[in-house]
Image 1 (tube, helix red, strand yellow):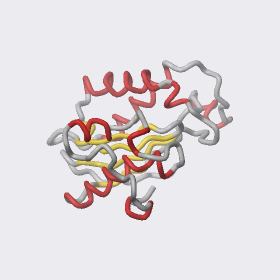
Image 2 (cartoon, rainbow, N blue to C red; image 1 turned 90 degrees about the vertical axis):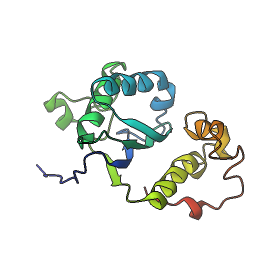
Image 3 (tube, rainbow, N blue to C red; image 1 turned 30 degrees about the vertical axis):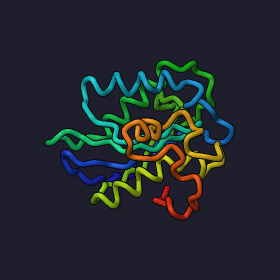
Length: 177
């Protein structure tokens, strides 16, 4: 088995991309958004973190999480979030033979992508990328149309104007995926 090496920076802020195993035509995350929210709340009780920015799309999500000082264990948090969500979803997904042998569900990709936020510029680029993502993927024409995004909180706090990103080019927000 591959030994994935991850950076350990206690108290750091991280950008994540987390995908469902079957992305094509899958709308599970938005169809069961309340269960996903519940999973975040449930895990946060025993494993604190701050959601700095988030967007939930039908088959994947992006978010920026900050961990408490002295804590670098984001992998456990994601494992617990995925597990809580999966336990509360009816079993009707295709499960590969290798997953079946391990007693795993087939909802999520086993891994996730993380990026350590290095500075304020990096942070802002990734916040912008998160909020622009539903437009990038063609789910909506404007950022404000997507309901499952922290963009609306950023507008309420005065960080963004309501029509932010309306005239932007996609390349302006390409933080990588």
